Image 1 (tube, helix red, strand yellow):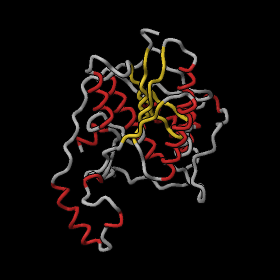
Image 2 (spheres, one colour):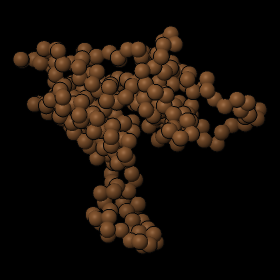
Image 3 (cartoon, helix red, strand yellow):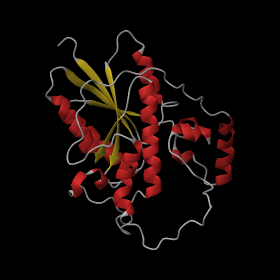
Image 4 (tube, one colour):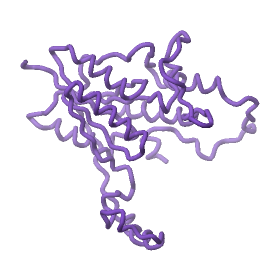
Length: 275
């Protein structure tokens, strides 16, 4: 069908930045081509129910379909209020950056697998649009790797390709290490330190900040019920904080009057660069 919208979904994980982001850099390059592999871009960030408590996104006190995001042994919240605030600020900062680049960011809550499935199913019955592929950065820890496999399984059911990118998240890139096999790693830390220290003086060059990205598609499937996504940063922080603040330890001491934190961190690449 001629004129059919082809959508690329970029599933963001910890790569919440526009500058020095290999995927956004590639998207900006492809967007300049006359023959584009896709017509629209859908950046998608999911607050995962297994790691972040999301019952605050449900109106009217309805029960959540997910278990509380607590640690298995101690029963503590896996994401406390300070981290929740930092994540919300980081997501919103990227959202504004993407809007300035002609795109945008859609926020979803739930398991990543369910969020991706909901979006794919929303496009599945349409004749005017199709999902071209899903791109995401790879992670090495077990939980994130399982999450990645679940996305690949959901996408395979809809015949959608998934591409896993290497995220250049480290100051010394692990691909620049002078050995390829872990067996070559020295048993003595001093030897290892002397091997990698010179790399700190020649880090990889920062990738440029894209100025123009493909637009969001006109139609985007809504967040699955019973959750609702806030339309402002304060409301997003409130939704993340609500269940956590109700369950804080009692009689917590207050900060002394006039005292200030030595690290009043604000989330987002802008504040990070200013630090």
